Image (cartoon, rainbow, N blue to C red; front, side, top):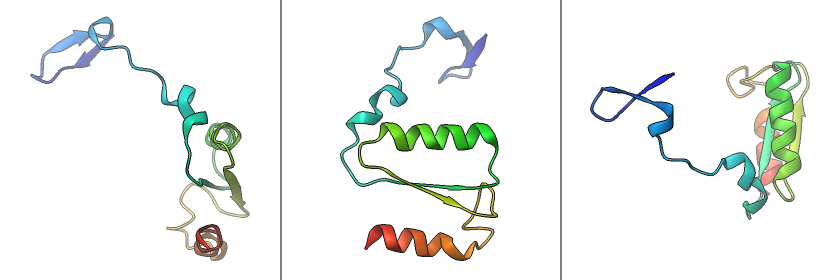
Length: 88
């Protein structure tokens, strides 16, 4: 596979610098974290979100009933309330 480089030329993936996966460093997050997802979100998105909440120390998972991936755009009544409750 090829990926773009800074000068627009294509280079192989093996030319890229290896960086640690952020997923492997989630346990280093030291701030309060709210993972907010919709009940109707895609299954893989829900699984990823649940994994985030499990791996981030002290994270809160909030699943909003009857909404999908963008509850703030869908104006789910609990969305802003959940954020406000978390921030309080």
